[in-house]
Length: 233
Image (cartoon, rainbow, N blue to C red; front, side, top):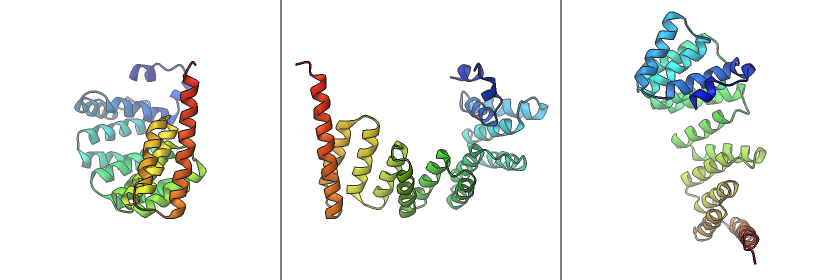
Protein backbone atom coordinates (compact mmCIF):
# COMPACT_ATOMS: atom_id res chain seq x y z
CA UNK A 1 0.00 0.00 0.00
CA UNK A 2 2.79 2.41 0.91
CA UNK A 3 4.59 1.73 -2.37
CA UNK A 4 1.42 2.48 -4.34
CA UNK A 5 1.04 5.78 -2.52
CA UNK A 6 4.66 6.80 -2.88
CA UNK A 7 4.88 5.80 -6.54
CA UNK A 8 1.68 7.47 -7.69
CA UNK A 9 1.92 9.04 -11.13
CA UNK A 10 -0.51 11.86 -10.43
CA UNK A 11 1.87 14.59 -9.36
CA UNK A 12 -0.87 17.21 -8.99
CA UNK A 13 -2.37 15.05 -6.23
CA UNK A 14 0.99 14.26 -4.65
CA UNK A 15 1.69 17.97 -4.32
CA UNK A 16 -1.55 18.67 -2.47
CA UNK A 17 -1.54 19.31 1.26
CA UNK A 18 -4.00 16.53 2.02
CA UNK A 19 -2.01 14.01 0.00
CA UNK A 20 1.07 14.85 2.06
CA UNK A 21 -0.94 14.29 5.24
CA UNK A 22 -2.31 10.96 4.01
CA UNK A 23 1.19 9.80 3.13
CA UNK A 24 2.54 10.90 6.52
CA UNK A 25 -0.30 9.09 8.30
CA UNK A 26 0.43 5.93 6.33
CA UNK A 27 4.11 6.04 7.21
CA UNK A 28 3.32 6.73 10.87
CA UNK A 29 0.87 3.82 11.01
CA UNK A 30 3.19 1.14 9.63
CA UNK A 31 5.84 -0.87 11.45
CA UNK A 32 7.30 -0.08 14.85
CA UNK A 33 5.94 3.28 16.12
CA UNK A 34 9.32 4.03 17.72
CA UNK A 35 10.94 3.94 14.29
CA UNK A 36 8.25 6.26 12.94
CA UNK A 37 8.81 8.72 15.80
CA UNK A 38 12.56 8.72 15.13
CA UNK A 39 12.01 9.17 11.39
CA UNK A 40 9.73 12.20 11.75
CA UNK A 41 11.79 13.76 14.54
CA UNK A 42 14.87 13.49 12.29
CA UNK A 43 13.01 15.11 9.39
CA UNK A 44 11.95 18.03 11.58
CA UNK A 45 15.37 18.44 13.24
CA UNK A 46 17.24 18.43 9.93
CA UNK A 47 14.47 20.30 8.09
CA UNK A 48 14.42 17.56 5.46
CA UNK A 49 10.77 17.36 4.54
CA UNK A 50 8.46 18.33 1.71
CA UNK A 51 5.94 19.71 4.19
CA UNK A 52 6.50 20.67 7.82
CA UNK A 53 2.77 20.27 8.45
CA UNK A 54 2.88 16.69 7.15
CA UNK A 55 6.00 15.86 9.17
CA UNK A 56 4.47 17.16 12.40
CA UNK A 57 1.21 15.41 11.60
CA UNK A 58 3.02 12.12 11.07
CA UNK A 59 4.95 12.58 14.30
CA UNK A 60 1.71 13.23 16.20
CA UNK A 61 0.17 10.05 14.78
CA UNK A 62 3.27 8.04 15.69
CA UNK A 63 3.27 9.49 19.21
CA UNK A 64 -0.37 8.48 19.52
CA UNK A 65 0.61 4.93 18.64
CA UNK A 66 3.29 5.11 21.33
CA UNK A 67 0.63 6.28 23.83
CA UNK A 68 2.74 9.40 24.36
CA UNK A 69 -0.24 11.72 24.48
CA UNK A 70 1.50 14.85 25.83
CA UNK A 71 3.95 14.65 22.91
CA UNK A 72 1.08 14.17 20.46
CA UNK A 73 -0.67 17.19 21.96
CA UNK A 74 2.49 19.28 21.51
CA UNK A 75 2.64 18.37 17.83
CA UNK A 76 -1.01 19.28 17.39
CA UNK A 77 -0.22 22.67 18.96
CA UNK A 78 2.63 23.00 16.47
CA UNK A 79 0.23 22.27 13.62
CA UNK A 80 -2.09 24.98 14.91
CA UNK A 81 0.79 27.48 14.92
CA UNK A 82 1.44 26.56 11.29
CA UNK A 83 -2.21 27.49 10.62
CA UNK A 84 -3.10 24.24 8.91
CA UNK A 85 -6.76 24.29 7.84
CA UNK A 86 -7.03 20.63 6.87
CA UNK A 87 -9.92 18.69 8.44
CA UNK A 88 -7.44 15.83 8.88
CA UNK A 89 -5.60 17.95 11.43
CA UNK A 90 -8.86 18.75 13.20
CA UNK A 91 -9.76 15.06 13.34
CA UNK A 92 -6.34 14.24 14.77
CA UNK A 93 -6.67 17.00 17.36
CA UNK A 94 -10.02 15.58 18.46
CA UNK A 95 -8.59 12.06 18.57
CA UNK A 96 -5.82 13.22 20.88
CA UNK A 97 -8.34 14.83 23.21
CA UNK A 98 -10.47 11.69 23.24
CA UNK A 99 -7.42 9.56 24.01
CA UNK A 100 -6.94 11.80 27.06
CA UNK A 101 -10.58 11.26 28.10
CA UNK A 102 -11.36 14.90 27.30
CA UNK A 103 -14.66 14.38 25.49
CA UNK A 104 -15.82 17.95 26.00
CA UNK A 105 -12.60 19.19 24.43
CA UNK A 106 -12.98 16.79 21.51
CA UNK A 107 -16.58 17.86 20.94
CA UNK A 108 -15.55 21.51 20.94
CA UNK A 109 -12.98 20.75 18.25
CA UNK A 110 -15.55 18.89 16.17
CA UNK A 111 -18.10 21.72 16.42
CA UNK A 112 -15.60 24.38 15.39
CA UNK A 113 -14.09 22.24 12.63
CA UNK A 114 -17.47 21.33 11.14
CA UNK A 115 -18.34 25.01 11.01
CA UNK A 116 -15.35 25.35 8.67
CA UNK A 117 -15.85 22.04 6.85
CA UNK A 118 -19.58 21.25 7.12
CA UNK A 119 -19.56 18.44 4.55
CA UNK A 120 -16.48 16.58 5.77
CA UNK A 121 -17.55 13.04 6.62
CA UNK A 122 -14.67 12.14 8.96
CA UNK A 123 -15.51 15.11 11.19
CA UNK A 124 -19.21 14.24 11.07
CA UNK A 125 -18.67 10.60 12.03
CA UNK A 126 -16.22 11.61 14.75
CA UNK A 127 -18.63 14.12 16.26
CA UNK A 128 -21.50 11.62 16.40
CA UNK A 129 -19.27 8.94 17.90
CA UNK A 130 -17.95 11.39 20.51
CA UNK A 131 -21.50 12.43 21.41
CA UNK A 132 -22.35 8.77 21.99
CA UNK A 133 -19.25 8.29 24.14
CA UNK A 134 -20.28 11.36 26.14
CA UNK A 135 -23.73 9.92 26.83
CA UNK A 136 -25.47 12.39 24.50
CA UNK A 137 -27.47 9.80 22.59
CA UNK A 138 -30.30 12.14 21.70
CA UNK A 139 -27.94 14.71 20.18
CA UNK A 140 -26.11 11.97 18.31
CA UNK A 141 -29.39 10.65 16.93
CA UNK A 142 -30.53 14.12 15.89
CA UNK A 143 -27.30 14.73 14.00
CA UNK A 144 -27.20 11.31 12.33
CA UNK A 145 -30.86 11.43 11.30
CA UNK A 146 -30.57 14.96 9.95
CA UNK A 147 -27.55 14.06 7.84
CA UNK A 148 -29.27 10.92 6.54
CA UNK A 149 -31.96 13.12 5.05
CA UNK A 150 -29.23 14.64 2.89
CA UNK A 151 -27.28 11.43 2.19
CA UNK A 152 -29.62 8.44 2.66
CA UNK A 153 -27.14 6.05 1.03
CA UNK A 154 -24.44 6.66 3.65
CA UNK A 155 -23.97 3.29 5.34
CA UNK A 156 -21.74 4.64 8.10
CA UNK A 157 -24.47 7.07 9.13
CA UNK A 158 -27.02 4.26 9.31
CA UNK A 159 -24.62 2.39 11.57
CA UNK A 160 -24.19 5.43 13.82
CA UNK A 161 -27.93 5.96 13.83
CA UNK A 162 -28.37 2.35 14.99
CA UNK A 163 -25.85 2.94 17.79
CA UNK A 164 -27.72 6.10 18.77
CA UNK A 165 -31.03 4.25 19.00
CA UNK A 166 -29.33 1.52 21.03
CA UNK A 167 -27.96 4.12 23.45
CA UNK A 168 -31.50 5.43 23.92
CA UNK A 169 -32.95 1.95 24.42
CA UNK A 170 -35.02 2.12 21.23
CA UNK A 171 -34.59 -1.45 20.07
CA UNK A 172 -37.10 -1.48 17.20
CA UNK A 173 -35.54 1.58 15.62
CA UNK A 174 -32.06 0.23 16.30
CA UNK A 175 -32.80 -2.91 14.29
CA UNK A 176 -34.44 -0.88 11.50
CA UNK A 177 -31.37 1.32 11.14
CA UNK A 178 -29.06 -1.69 11.22
CA UNK A 179 -31.19 -3.32 8.52
CA UNK A 180 -30.66 -0.32 6.23
CA UNK A 181 -26.91 -0.60 6.72
CA UNK A 182 -27.06 -4.25 5.66
CA UNK A 183 -29.20 -3.36 2.63
CA UNK A 184 -26.59 -0.87 1.48
CA UNK A 185 -23.90 -3.53 1.95
CA UNK A 186 -25.88 -5.98 -0.21
CA UNK A 187 -26.66 -8.25 2.76
CA UNK A 188 -30.38 -8.77 2.24
CA UNK A 189 -30.69 -11.84 4.47
CA UNK A 190 -29.03 -10.04 7.38
CA UNK A 191 -31.30 -7.03 6.78
CA UNK A 192 -34.39 -9.25 6.85
CA UNK A 193 -33.20 -10.81 10.10
CA UNK A 194 -32.81 -7.35 11.64
CA UNK A 195 -36.35 -6.39 10.67
CA UNK A 196 -37.63 -9.64 12.13
CA UNK A 197 -35.90 -8.67 15.36
CA UNK A 198 -37.53 -5.25 15.09
CA UNK A 199 -40.95 -6.94 14.99
CA UNK A 200 -40.13 -8.74 18.24
CA UNK A 201 -38.49 -5.77 19.98
CA UNK A 202 -41.45 -5.02 22.24
CA UNK A 203 -41.19 -1.25 21.93
CA UNK A 204 -42.09 1.36 19.32
CA UNK A 205 -45.48 2.74 18.40
CA UNK A 206 -48.01 1.56 15.81
CA UNK A 207 -46.54 3.77 13.07
CA UNK A 208 -42.98 2.49 13.67
CA UNK A 209 -44.16 -1.12 13.62
CA UNK A 210 -46.08 -0.49 10.39
CA UNK A 211 -42.97 0.97 8.75
CA UNK A 212 -40.86 -2.00 9.86
CA UNK A 213 -43.47 -4.46 8.60
CA UNK A 214 -43.73 -2.74 5.23
CA UNK A 215 -39.96 -2.67 4.81
CA UNK A 216 -39.74 -6.35 5.78
CA UNK A 217 -42.29 -7.31 3.13
CA UNK A 218 -40.39 -5.27 0.55
CA UNK A 219 -37.06 -6.90 1.34
CA UNK A 220 -38.51 -10.40 1.45
CA UNK A 221 -40.02 -9.84 -2.00
CA UNK A 222 -36.70 -8.50 -3.29
CA UNK A 223 -34.82 -11.47 -1.86
CA UNK A 224 -37.32 -13.92 -3.41
CA UNK A 225 -36.90 -12.26 -6.79
CA UNK A 226 -33.13 -12.46 -6.53
CA UNK A 227 -33.32 -16.15 -5.67
CA UNK A 228 -35.56 -16.78 -8.68
CA UNK A 229 -33.05 -15.06 -10.96
CA UNK A 230 -30.27 -17.28 -9.62
CA UNK A 231 -32.28 -20.45 -10.25
CA UNK A 232 -31.70 -21.71 -13.85
CA UNK A 233 -35.05 -23.52 -14.10
